[in-house]
Image (cartoon, rainbow, N blue to C red; front, side):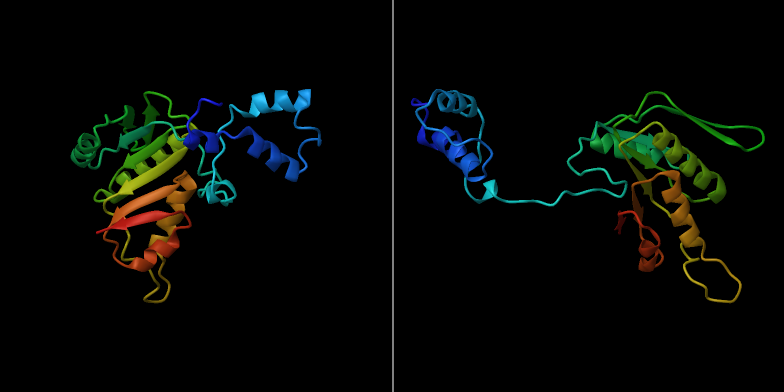
Length: 219
């Protein structure tokens, strides 16, 4: 300790740590020259202590929509592409210098959709790139099934990237006995398991209020 520069002594000051613990009554009060104190000093000398205001600063824990702590470590970013816009997904992957993760999307003769991942995404940060342009119903169901597949495989966070969000014009009741399909669509995406969403040029900004998960609307 004696050979350290002053800048490091301020961050590794055992006596300062000792006095701080005494003020908090975390340790029993005893003589500075006693054997327990000398052992304690040797122990805390290896513990870095931040100096200044940052030492006493308290920050509220941040959580995402699923209740996870923001300090929770997300694994590697995983990019998944649906079958609606493979060219866009490939360009995004190239720009991020990341490969597209493997998946199988099979449409059976009865139009049922089956999704299977090639590798586990447990604890990873997954992004799904899928537009909901025509054919709307097929692309929408494919998106929802892919999101639920990631959710059931315990992905830490799932972000859906939807360049075109379908049913954007059905955002209000402009005549009697009609649905608000944009709200229904937002509920379906959330129930499937998405934690965040990204889209482009919504028909109306109020559609963002239909989601209870955070999102970004780009233009």
